[in-house]
Figure 1 (cartoon, rainbow, N blue to C red):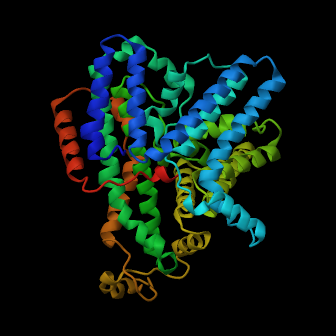
Figure 2: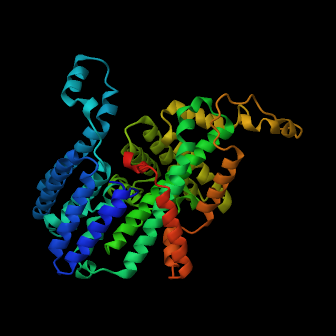
Figure 3: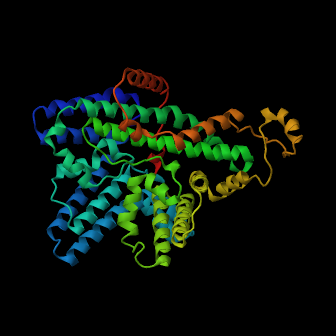
Length: 492
């Protein structure tokens, strides 16, 4: 079930909220949490009920392992055995469902590869929804249990921690200590007008980002990236910027909706998105983009590898390992690995520059960072490394600046000023021509200078014009939901 669907907004959400607060009037935490858990199971099973047993088995195995780690925490050897078994179980699950086909593409034709194919049946593997997110969430739980920093939670608490529907599908990746104590507060069972109002506002803003902006930009992305070798300079930049903003508004829209839904239920989820395109360094970008994933990679991979404690060379190696695995987490493909490696190189350069005392003016730092992010997104979105190379090469303008056919009349005037153009492109990918440049320029100003949702909410005061504006925005968004589109991060 998708947040941006009529069944969710007009059926599932009213029933789940109404049932939760009606049961909450009885004062029973167990019944209220049970209702939320049932709602979350229905929410997850709506997409494909076949994967309910898988996520249920994953929850049960990790819960039991967590309990064993809690019980034997004084026995270092036994604790490590249980931890390694848990890591192997979780990584094995995600490796089978997400990486089997990719890994088997490396195998040369042989009897062994035929036998493995017959054993694993890769053509029949369907990627379970949210497996990347709930796997990482449970790995963090097991590691914390090994470290002895978790209490002995009940199965109900743990299951709700993993399945809580506002954050289940695409994050944020929450820690047990961030949400389980909130599930056990009696006052959270009571309807709170302030939390509900703010939650609705945040949800509407996020929904409008997804439906009105991200989905509108999708048409400017798919066709150009499918014909990467034939793009002109302007078409390549239009496609790159369109995807840069499509992913931005799609993911920030989801994060807003998740936060809003949590607030409606009196649960405060961690902020996962904080205007990343305002960053003046790649380090800052990763502190603002998918914050909970960045924190997970830092706390459970980069620091255990040694972080920056073993010298500068080791820090670069640790950064590269972390970002390569972070790229692979997003998808089974060389483009994702290359994207992670590219960001690993950028982060390493950033740290080296800072160490030697090299600084750029703020505006230039922003521009360099933003260009690096755009280059990374081209690699990330391209269907192959070859396609990424074609698009990036076209973006350089080395082979000339090509205009769409509808603007051929401008050429003679522009050539008077010494601006030369190659032949016009044979395919008219350019969506809307110069109008697209204006729209993308306005969007750039928006993401760089305007306040984000969290900043708006901090300044929010109930006013009649707020109600009018949000009501109009909600109506426009609902009228624009002609078809249900998945969030981009669902595929990661």
